[in-house]
Length: 520
Image (cartoon, rainbow, N blue to C red; front, side, top):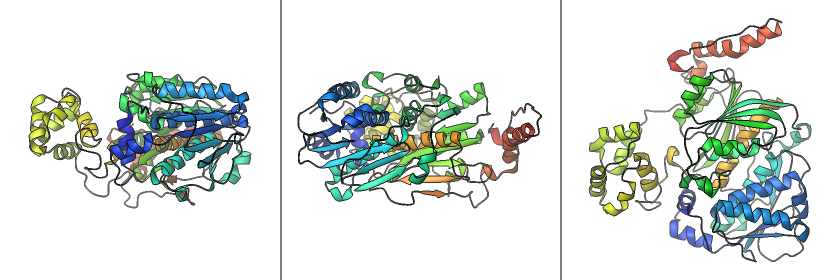
């Protein structure tokens, strides 16, 4: 069977959540399964069903080399379109005739075998997943429940393929994008203006947020900020990207998907350059970033409201923040103790702590790794130089992330649990985080978010649990910027005072040019 040519990143992501699995065992598991995708006629006819199918194809075609797409004759065109999309993601994917396991969207086609089934459906904000029987599909234009159902279906499939037991599956679960409260969904129709939102980060989480927001039937504008291009390894989890997008600018790929009421403007800039050129007063900002340092920098720019999403080996999560009354983003990422510098971590991992200054310079400048440094690494770690030569002239971070954390030089599993910055998430893991991030922004536009700061966490390696969301208080040490009098005063001048002035019937322009410590 034909695994995608970016399969190595899939193996890395899988190895980080599967104890004892190496690349060969992961390959064998994937090549032994034929994943069925059953499209009910009801799914082909409604917007939620089509959205659910679209995202499932984008998730499954990245990992599994063989898909069996089945439907009734009247929906054959939908199945053909699904195969076309799958080929754009993995041009070598195969389409055999019989599955070994199947995900069913909506009604079950008349021809059914004895293989295990996972049933998915949705209704507006609500996602349904289970093994008991077919799940219903709603008639709304809301893609959030459908997208979450696709991620949960893919997560259940992954657990079944690699854990081998139906006991690890959701038997009959509901998850609501309304703060995991399905009883609120009836009054939460998508209407009015979405407004203006800044998406910081065009990676895996940003891709999924863009997938959802491009389908929201509300007027609005998304500013997508990321200066980087897509490389081959990204395609393992960038759900709106296709195989032909290697080398394209991330935010430009995101923006091309916006053909509805919400428009998107790509900004191929670093975040600091974006705010320096476009201004610091933003009503809403959603973060899809890799590092705690970048998250804190975004919070320090003081948007009026901010949400943050993340993935890590243990879970994924989304937090929605109130700067004045709840925990801000920085509160969640303040270090508990002194942290080792990145240059020291990399130098130690490569076995050359005596070359710390050279490592520091290469990390700062982004220059390619010279041959003499590779020779030193080979000698220090007793590695054949042939394994290192493919990284000559490439950025040092590539050598560290791909070679020493990603299995290209040191075998997968030999370096232990990765640091957060080099964690490679499963595609459905990062996609679910992105969908929850988009849902937080939509709720905020509709005035549906709970007051204060709320944090939602999900472990995709287990069935859905209860009490997934909880409030978060400010850091107890009192050292965060949201507890600093100067930052709080600047925030109030930006947003609170103008609102009060307008409420009094006098419109004034408030100019904010500086915050302490270079924040805004």
